[in-house]
Amino acid sequence: MSEHDHQDQQQPGRHERFRGDYPIVVSGLRTQFGEHVVHDDLDLEVRRGEIIGVVGGSGTGKSVLMRAIIGLQGVAAGDVEVFGKSITGADPDEHIGVRNRWGVLFQGGALFSTLTVGENVEVPLKQFYPDIDDELRREIARYKVLLSGLPEDAVSKYPSELSGGMKKRAGLARALALDPELLFLDEPTAGLDPIGAAKFDSLTKELQETLGLTVFLITHDLDTLYEICDRVAVLADKKVIAVGTIPELLETDHPWIDEYFNGPRGRAVLASRERERAKST
Ligand SMILES: Nc1ncnc2c1ncn2[C@@H]1O[C@H](COP(=O)(O)OP(=O)(O)OP(=O)(O)O)[C@@H](O)[C@H]1O
Image (cartoon, rainbow, N blue to C red; front, side, top):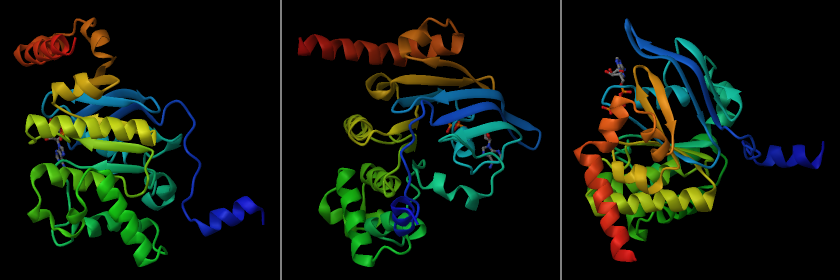
């Protein structure tokens, strides 16, 4: 047995980081519920190390797309590759080595209400690394809670004792439990006040930079798009109709994109950014 094999046996699930350019490649995706087609022939490539914002009107299929990418949503046609491996139609057990390389913050946090924050973070650790001893697992969970910007005493609190912003951070701590390379965030700043939302954005950016994460971020928050997203993918007409930086998107002349970024809210965000810039110069 080589030294490498030996190490792999000692650390189940250990893997090389993905070195390819596109950790997520979606090609010709079709999803549907009965007769209702949500995506049809949808393509998307997510670049390694970027924060990609995913926007679109309500019901255009942003969450369903995320679920298709992480294998929770059946796919009627097309292919989804994550870290170069096809997820589509695969037996979940077959791809355990891929599934422990991403973390997900679902809308609303999806925390277990009967477990403390620390115990919530321990759930994926128990699932994927059952042999870690209790003390080490607790210590890893505590570290992830602190990494997510929560105070030490949050570890032993129950979700019902937390504010909305703290719940999001607790959900983030759980998403980070397995040291993921890919982070999925479904509307992370929804329901937060503007200051809390800006803090969460900064944390996301900091984690992307320090941990080298690729972030798939569904949002309706224009501030988030301007502040931290490297590119933005726009869902409409059952497809990704455009993907690029905001200035690139504005050149496409698509009516929805124009309305989204140049409508009253888009203009207000731009004006406020201009004011901030003027203040800081
Ligand atoms: N389990 C399901 N069964 C049937 N239809 C579903 C199911 N999940 C989602 N849909 C439908 O798929 C479409 C896309 O839903 P999805 O939640 O992805 O939209 P979204 O773009 O994330 O919307 P929002 O911005 O409002 O969160 C919607 O029409 C929704 O009703």
